[in-house]
Length: 111
Image 1 (spheres, rainbow, N blue to C red):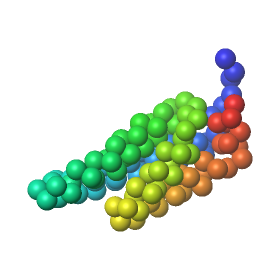
Image 2: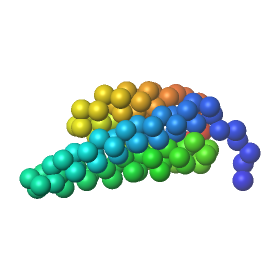
Image 3: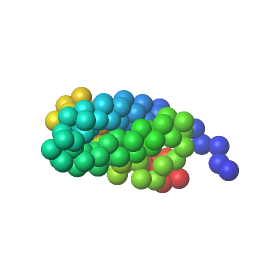
Image 4: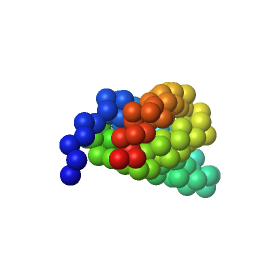
């Protein structure tokens, strides 16, 4: 196995993804609990699952594991944040996406 050092931008984007995922999980949980009685709350389970994926992928990125679909999960998290009107989650996820598209990080992800 190669001994390639993980770029700092990659790990920072992992931290930002975890923070954004926690914000999204909290907001979508509030929507589910607040709207379950009108049968619309179940629809907010989709952003909740996206938030769980953000947290899992962000934790793997923080650990330095190469995740090929990292940028896709990041963009999905940003879209999910926008649907929930979660400006903090969208901001953190946007910064993470910008860091993930840096040439050093893209080279690391491509191996």
